[in-house]
Length: 186
Ligand code: FES
Image (cartoon, rainbow, N blue to C red; front, side, top):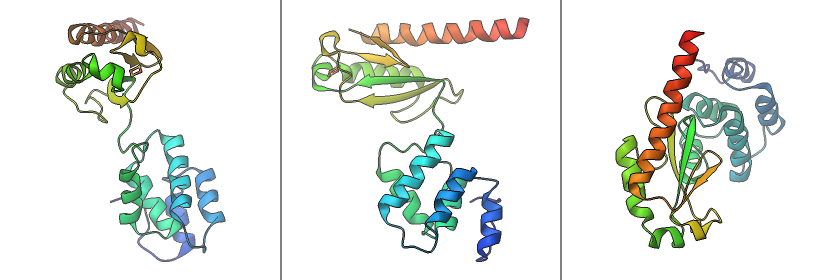
């Protein structure tokens, strides 16, 4: 539960408290619809704006949306968790996307996924504690001839064995360590 959100029914007070949590364009968007019945599609549009700004839907932001749009918090969190394109955690610096499409699956995407989960200590949809990697899945990257395929940020790798997946993760880790060491020298 947020500390920033006012415990009041006064609209002006609620809005003032929420200004610390949401940017102006989202406040304006919600206010433009204030007093009207909020359909699920309007709520989804608001949540898209929030995710577009913050990269994910934080508890504080969802609480502010609930108060400002006068929608029960349970409905806001229900919609946020129902649709897979909403993220409830910040994304990592590097996004590892494992293709689970048919071509990749028959070539061992499940073993590849398991290796990456073991290596990173996270499941799909999660981010490592150091904030470096998020693990996500996708249905087809359009490079089925390279199956099984993973994509790290914008770079596609394939075909990738479980052992090679570990090496790819190591490569990014080394790059990050190198960048950190350079920053420390400067
Ligand atoms: S199924 Fe994986 S790239 Fe098409």
